[in-house]
Image (tube, rainbow, N blue to C red; front, side):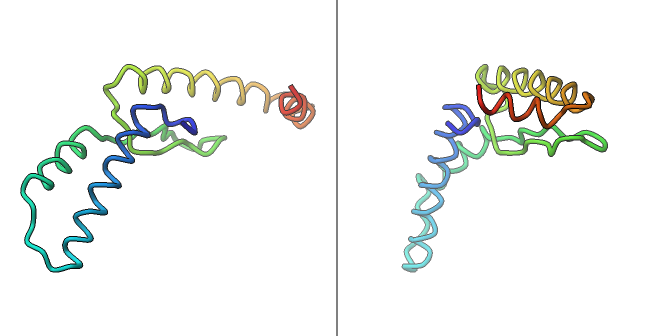
Length: 106
């Protein structure tokens, strides 16, 4: 799911779909739908900021909306931390671009 995880991608799509319906209802000058608003609020309450902000990062940090308490998201955060560490170690080597190209070929 493009690195966001299945749960997060599904929640984001659900939020997008509900927001689109609300927006269309507003555009059509329809009265607000309290059940629809409750569904949207429920989805949004599950979303938090997935961020890797740190001071002076060597690699641009990841940032997206996610269910930060979901096990899949927690595992993603660990995986991204390991990947970031590997990349930072590769960057310290004098032949960094050779390492990058080798990884792309693999």
